[in-house]
Length: 173
View (cartoon, rainbow, N blue to C red):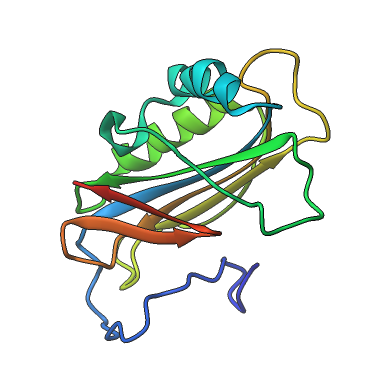
C-alpha cells in the first residue's frame, strides 16, 4: 500500500529509534510463496526442490518453513504456503538489487513492484514484489501467489526474525 509519497509503507519494529543517518546495516529477503499441491510429501520432494533450482536456497540451505494455516477454515486446502527469510550482509549495494531482480524474474515473468531505492534513506532500500495468477502453469513448482520483500534488517542481533502469518521464519546468519 503506497504511503503519501507514493512509496510503500514499511513497518518498523516497535521502539526503533528514528535517525537521519543512512541505514548501513544488513538486509533480509522475505519470501512468502503459495504453491498448489495436494500433499506435503510432493511439496517437499518435488515443488520445493524445483523452487530452489530457480531462486536458490534461502536460509543458507536450511530449508523452507511450511506454514500451518489450519486455523483458516475457508482457505483452499490445495494451496501450501512456504516461507523463508534470507540474510544479506550489508551495507546495501546495487548488486543486492540486481541479484534480487534476477531471482524474481526466474520465478515468474511479471511482478507488481513498489520500491524505495534511495540507499541514503534512514530506513534503507525497500522493495516489495507481488506476483499472482488464477491457476498455476503446468510445470513445477506450481506457484500461484508470491510476495517477496527486500528489506533492511533492523534486528541487529545476527539473526533474521520475522513473524509471517502463523509461523516464525527465523534463520541464523
